[in-house]
Structure formats: C-alpha cells, structure tokens
Length: 328
Image 1 (cartoon, one colour):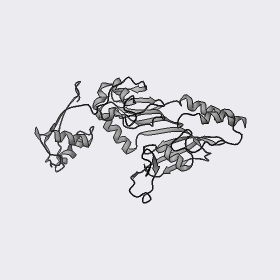
Image 2: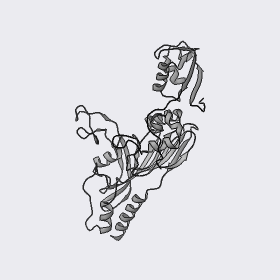
Image 3: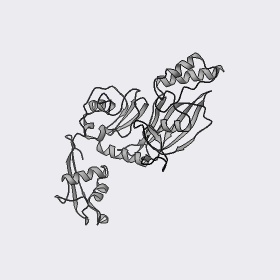
Image 4: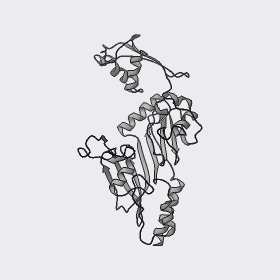
C-alpha cells in the first residue's frame, strides 16, 4: 500500500517454490509492480529486508522468510514545476493521457532547460516528482503532435515500461510524405545515432558502421490516400526508437513533408497550383501526428484506447492536396 505521505509499506512471505532463489529475484516476483532496479536499490538502502534484517541482493533464500518493504518515495530530479499549458484527454489515479501540441518539448535537455511538458506535468500533479522522468515513459518529437501516456505512480510506470518492452502498447500515426506510394509494407531496419552528426539518427546495418550502436526498429505502414506527388499514410510502431518514423520513411524514399532534418528538397508535380506550392513551402514542421494509442490499463488490466483528431495544420494541408487532386 501507499500512504498519502508517499510511503510504501508492504510485506510478503517467500513461498517454498522460491527456495534457492536470490533475494532480488524473489522480491521482483513478490513485489512485481516495481522494477528490479528499484527493488535492488531498496535492498542496498536497507528498506527492503528479510525477516527484519538487512540482506544482500544475491543472498539465496530458503523459503518461508518474510520480506518487508518500507520506503519513502523521493523526488526523482531537480526539475521545476511550471504552469506550462497542455491538453489532457484522460486522467485517473494511474495514468494521464496527453494530446501534445506542436512546438512543445517533452523533456528538459540541451537548449530546453525548462518550459517543457515535464515541467507542466509536475505543476499539474505534485506526486509525479516521485516517479522517474515525472512519469514520461515514451516521447514525441518537439514538432510531432498527438497522444502520449504518462504514469502517475511507480506501479503504473513499471507496468507501462514493461508493456513498451513487450510491445503491447499500440501507437498509430498519420503522416504526409513526399513521393507517391503504391501500397504498404513493413520497414525492418535498425536505427542508431548517426556516425558523424550526433543530433541525428540513421539506418545502421551491422558491420557497415564500425563502432556504431544500433537497435532493432520496425514500422508497419499503409497508404491512406495518394496524390500526384505526395502520400497520406498511417504508420504503426512495433518498436519506438528516436525519430523512427521520420528515419524509416526517408529510408524508403518518402521523407515527411516539412522534415528539415531527414527531408529532401520540396517535390511538386508539374503544374502544381500556387496554393499548393505555398502550403507545402510554409508547412512549419514535419507532418506527423500520433493518432491512436492503446495499452493495458495498469490498474484494471483492461485494454484502453484513445484517438486524437488531426491538428489544424495537417487538416489544412490535406484539404489543399485533395482540392488539387479533384481539379486535375
């Protein structure tokens, strides 16, 4: 249980089938709402004990011992709560679902020390100070809009990070890309930090970039609507690497409209109208929106889902593209 003062007080008897299992491994099974890393730290701090005494993480248990946990949750970082406005589409005792606007940075970093979604979350909900990264378990780029989930408790944080690892969190995006797609498919190529430009990500193949670190990245995409020089697509993430959709679409030869990092020169069909040319040239960001989000609710165990309307700028660009197509 968790008191109003942020104190955890739990106990559990070690069942006989865990005889011979390490202290930290048994604790992870008995107190499964908390991460193994946090439980190990509580063991080292002496607040997670065996029969009232301090134990060691690798100590083997016999079975029948009583594990007790009494810990005070503490602030995870030195970030300041700030009244940063953001849209909440759902909130309960476990999670907050946010519809992020363009031009809102999710987490403080170089060049953005404050004024971020994280600062706004801390202002909105004080208890988030005791959750890693104020409950942020996945991010959207500054100029990407749409749905994100935030964990309000350690239990919810552990559940959601586990679900992300197990790929039971489902995220579907809509994007407007340059080039004309003929259908859909899957992109299964690893992504890592660009070998020479550290602010960018890139497709990295094993053995080709010596010393580069890369991670599996899988995106599934299908065509929603095709235009003379552009495509409106939906992309479902199986993994969630930094800039994944932007990198994968550029790798396919269909960079997102407005993507100044991974895009190419503006593509226009012959005879494109002035309205379309202006709309494309002046589009202020990458045309990418997190449309749908679903996951298993950490408290109820039920699958929950939300959908967010396309933002005005993408709707207007689609209107111009559709109007152009209708006039041909």
